[in-house]
Amino acid sequence: MSPPHTTAPSRRRSVGALPLALALALMPLAAAAQQSIDKVNGSITAEAGQQYGDLETVNGSIRIHENARVRDAETVNGSIKVAASAHTGALETVNGSIRLEETVTVDGSMETVNGSIFVGRQGRVSGDVETVNGAIGLVDADVGGGIETVTGDLTVGAGSHVRGGIHYEKPSPSLIRINTKRRPPRVIIGPNAVVEGALRFEREVTLYVHTSARTGPISGATAVRYDTDRAPAE
Image 1 (cartoon, rainbow, N blue to C red):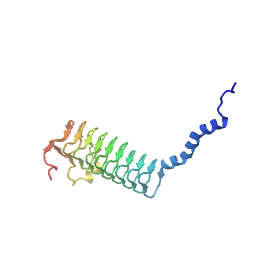
Image 2 (cartoon, rainbow, N blue to C red):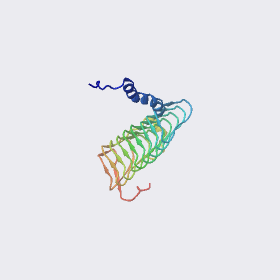
Image 3 (tube, rainbow, N blue to C red):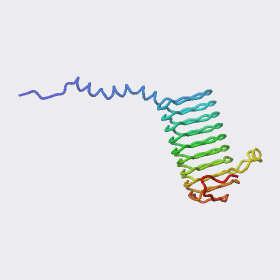
Image 4 (tube, one colour):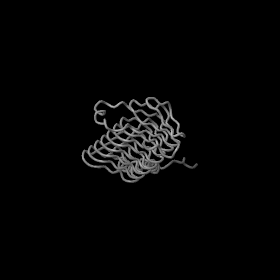
């Protein structure tokens, strides 16, 4: 009678150890790929095609290059610029602009106090877009949340889609004193643009809505319709 077939213990151990050894070997690479960068003074650059955790600085700009992946990016005094096809979490600055080139995806909100926001073609922002003093521009872009501002101009450009409405807050007394000589903000809803939800204006604005655009209910402003490629010049 032949002895019962058994698996050699050494072979069983070596086969079982392979996944563990592979995981241990990849751990340093994964940690490096998700590294976070935190500074007080100085700019931060996320290199093209690389993966990062959070990027944070106080005095400095943040540059995210093509196809990079970043969890969140935040600065106080500096701008944030994101190159084509990058993927990020929330983007936030206090004194600086935020600019997205084409086909950028933001899983979160975009917020600045003193600075403009621009979202390029086929850009996607899942959260809100907010400024206090700064223009907002969308070009064939999709915003999953709403747009909120106080004093800045707004262009929801051709083919853009804003799912959470638009809200212009009433300026504080200090902002009113600072901006007494400025014209009212100019708000443009361009050709084939869609704004779901309400458009609420708690301050004076000049509102232009293209005849091909679709919006939710408008309160606090009277829409001027136009059918040309560009809104009327003032």
